[in-house]
Length: 104
Image (tube, rainbow, N blue to C red; front, side, top):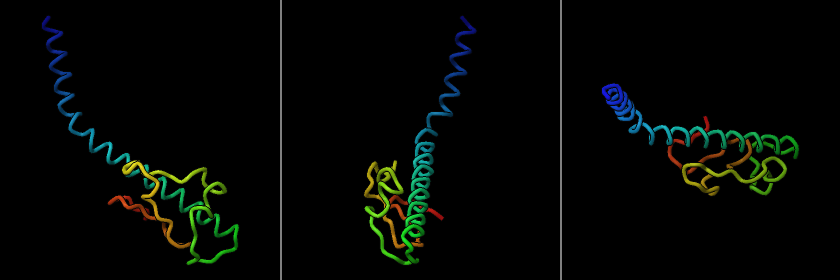
């Protein structure tokens, strides 16, 4: 009986350390996933520029890169919407509206 109580106390102590960190871990994971999406968008943009013989500064739309270079428009995991991403011009990094989601 004492052994079971000791095990339960140890589990309680471990849970006390782990539970407060779950929201921080989720936010960090969402940020890294969003930056991964931004990287994929950048690579698709760069490939489109090369394939279409465009120059830096050329305006582009989602229809230019979706289907040929991306399967679908990516969704930001933090906002749960694809409207969070802005393509920008060719040669510029795409952006996300969520604070801290920046491709450097």
